[in-house]
Amino acid sequence: HNSSGVGPGVKVAPCLLLGACFMVGLPVNIAVIFDRKYKRYASKVNPNILLLVLNLALVDSVALTTSPLTLYTLVWGFTLGDATCQMFFFILSTCLFIR
Image 1 (spheres, helix red, strand yellow):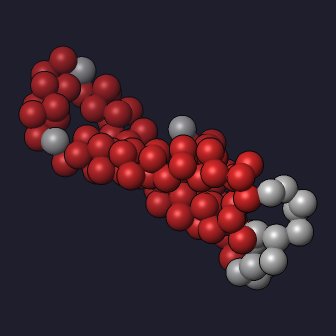
Image 2 (cartoon, one colour):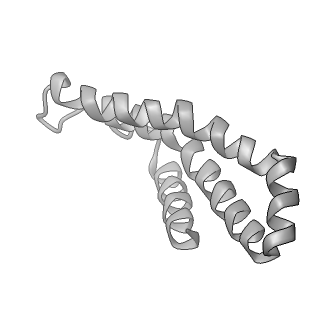
């Protein structure tokens, strides 16, 4: 039971946006991580660029994997316990600071 007092119609737009980010962002970040043409090009130009882009793609992928749990929280509230809540927000804040 969600006791926030917000109707379900208000939650539709954030859920659709976050779901679209997850469905598009995760495959694109995985493609960037495993793209060999980009790795060859970046290593010729500047190898540090490759490390920065791979770091960003990896951290974005980790952050996007938390999207289903965020969607669950938006719809039903956080009902999975305190330990899961702390771990969830630790992962999100770590991804934010690494970016």
